[in-house]
Length: 488
Image (cartoon, rainbow, N blue to C red; front, side, top):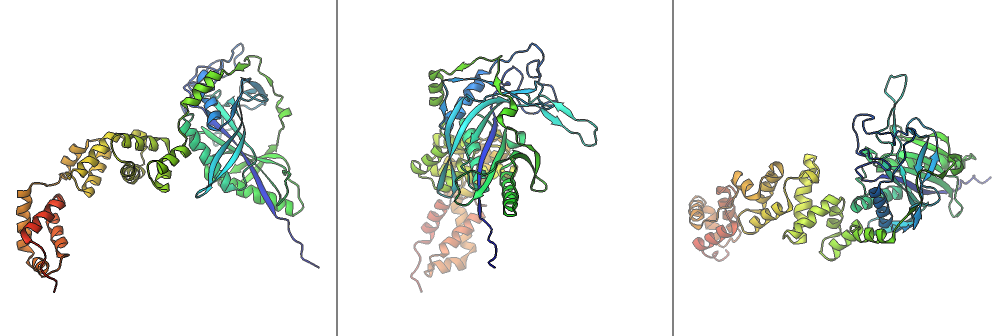
């Protein structure tokens, strides 16, 4: 009897990403929308759902949501409305969430992202809609009851609903990283997953290889890192595959990822739209989106990281590696471009920024935004090296001093006593001393060993503690020694 063969399955993945918009206030009230603070210190009658309170849409949140849609090449609706999504959690004071259902603000876009070096993929975006955040339930260890902090209630979010176009956990992680970078370069959010300003739910199903019909979808909620996106999906795909191969059945449900175990566990049977009993929010009007507003925001849309990366490579002649490193974060790209604008050629600027500045930031665990050294300060330092006032090695030491203390280039070089000696008479005396001390090397040179000149140069540099101008020292050596003798 032939051995039973197991059917091969393939995963189908779509991500739903919640992004907190970078507004100063909440979506429908004037309370501060920042992270942290004492529990329940950023609340008012509107975001705590007191009777008689009415929501008012924050105009800047609407602008930022439109910008998200434009960055994802979405169509912006001419009219949009808000709906009530009804569910009952302790951290949802109204008993419903103000969201958008059948008339989302943005529709039918896409995100291009790199799946492997040099190869990109386009994943479709079904919709981008606005909604308010819920509060946060706290479960103190050992306590007999839970607590609720409503500081986050009403914070403005967009939900970016991706189509099931992702074919592996690695693709899902790459998509999410590219989306985060796109949103950060667009200036709509800091997208800090540790602070909850970027959160991801993953929808995953499996189907026999070659099948076109989608399988039963399982949703994994609130994954909090790129690494955990992959871990959660790897586990869930394996769980579903094992169930299908053993004759089991996949149930449409919501599951939670347990970071410490690397597993998913069932939370509840998945609700459908009917379970939420959506209906238009009677306290908010239908909003007409002025085409002039959309066009103004389109023109103000910052250059995307992919366009910027291509420009660095094609127009400025940087390597693919350089362009990639310099477009990892918006602050890095801004600093690099400011260095170029201040007078350094792009390649030189790239070398100093990614090699020295970013290296120092990594070692010191600092953020670029806190840097006291300005792009103009860095250019002043490099110009000093180009004029021969500092050696390249000394310039690196001076930059460290500048980054550590905020000192200007000249002051840092002076304090470290690294300014290059360029006085011919002073260096000439040192050269004479070295020639007297190194008679054997001098003899080797005069006997035809040309490399001996470099040895003498090194001895003079050591005598000047690395501060002598090497070009001037070489010139003085040649004046005093003449050309090397004939080779023996």
